[in-house]
Amino acid sequence: MWVRLDDAMLDNPKIIAAGPLGFALHVAAILWCGRNLTDGHIPKRKVGSLLDLPSLQVSETTKVRVLHALTADDLAADLVRLNLWHDRGDTYELHDFLAYNPSKAEILADREISRRRAAMNADPALRRALQERDGHECRYCGVAVQWRDRKSPAGGTYDHVIPLSAGGDESLANLVVCCRRCNVKKGARTPEQAGMTLRSGRNLDGIKPDSGPPVPVPVPEKKIQRRALRSRRLPESETLTRERWDLAIAKGYDEATIRREWEKLALTEFGSPKSDWTAVWRKWLLNVRPRGDLQADGFQFRGPSVSSTREMLRAKGL
Image 1 (tube, rainbow, N blue to C red):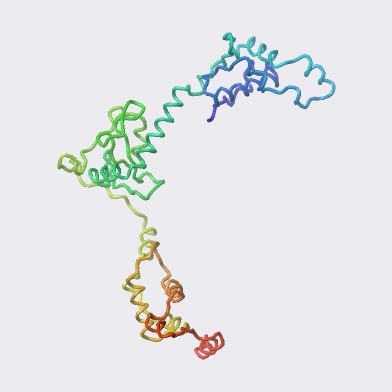
Image 2: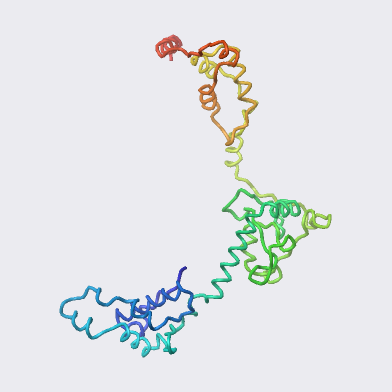
């Protein structure tokens, strides 16, 4: 849990009058209240444990006066006198604590909202139902959202039409597909409060949005070029070049094996996009094994020796 401190508090006349020890006790009390969610109240019995005076490093000339003439209760009394604290019987109340920090009720409400959001995001059936109803378009501006985009304004997310903080729920009727730009703009407000219009869903009541097709998101030309150069499957433009053929020959494979493995490579879909298919082919050859019928006959597959490979490459002028 975090607490908020005014960055100008060192210029506050009350803080200056409290001195360094009074300031230290005041800040320690703020931290204790924030961690324990007491809305700025601290029991008097806890004050002595917030500031360990005997362990303070002070000069010998002031040590006796500081350690024997001052106690935490003395410092607390000074803070009360300066109106930084208020004596409430068994507790002290920190002045203006709730003016800078959220109350216990607000913190617990925020935690509950975070818990409900996490539960919603962990429900795949609800996400599928939302996307089937709204498609992949923001229900506020109509832009085509990008679900894999986690940063830009066009990234896809979900929005509560009536915010959770205003009594909304996680039902399908209260959730819509939304782009990140509109989600930030709307915030914890209703569409009316934010001055935004909720469009009809693509499959809601069998009608499509009245405001036209979704607005396409422009993709930078360089990004389009990078996408074109990367693929999960071997593009048709890639062929078994002489360089790739020689790589397989150097591994000791015959012509039939090379052609068979190239066809298998062309039918394989990889988990991530590839751009250097020669490197992919080189790694593919490392996993090629003899055919099962040869293994059954006790055939042992052996590639060329290091010396023979060097002689072959030398003959090719490589």
